[in-house]
Length: 348
Ligand SMILES: [Zn+2]
Image (cartoon, rainbow, N blue to C red; front, side, top):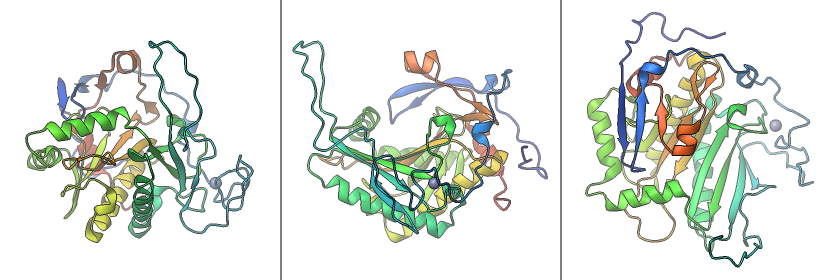
């Protein structure tokens, strides 16, 4: 059942957008094909969107007091609980690797630290249901973790992220995020840091000024933080959350900025869930500067990549996106921002 989001107001007028748009952060084109959003689809399974009901699940490896797959028992935690991932993608010291002896087969170590952040002891309490103060507590944990991990020997990057929903492959529905602190730069961060370095003006601040001047894609216009659907969005409901001032890491945000970041994050996550009355699957990433070197131009920010194009209709990364590396976005960023702004927040 989907809720009418804006029953009293005029329906949002659709902009026919059919063009390529340049993403200066990744230095790549995205094609906006807003005219294709109404093409017919058969709906995928609905079960991935159904909300959970229990606050404690005895089979959940992340609930307080339960035994994880490693055999370790979780404490009876009452707030945010952080632990090293039992099945890490990266490890310090890095795992041994096979040397092929053939120079055409190039490999490198997979060193790093992977952590899990359980947002709440309650199995059914999503980040979108947090108060602003609770969201601020999570930001404080991001700050503590970033400060600790970026100072470990060899760490080049601290990536904070959340995959939410079965549609993005989440195996455990207990609300949680993750951190990958790696001994190398991931490709997206490497490209972005190069774009920041070579730009003739502060890249993110000029983008932010342009978005604020245009105004059509802005969702949250706070004293310290702004959120918007970027002009070059790859996903229909993609949102950037950006501090007005440049910070390389989340840890240098002032108290006012941290509070406003909590408000901005709370605002967009509630809009997502309230839009169709279903938990909204997304991938959320906190982009931070490379840890080493002089990346003084890097402007840290959050990117949220929601996977739905419409209720029950995920965007699949098909041949063109996956094989040719070119995104097609079926939603006009101007229309999608208007839809998000129109969501009533008092119904959650
Ligand atoms: Zn749980």
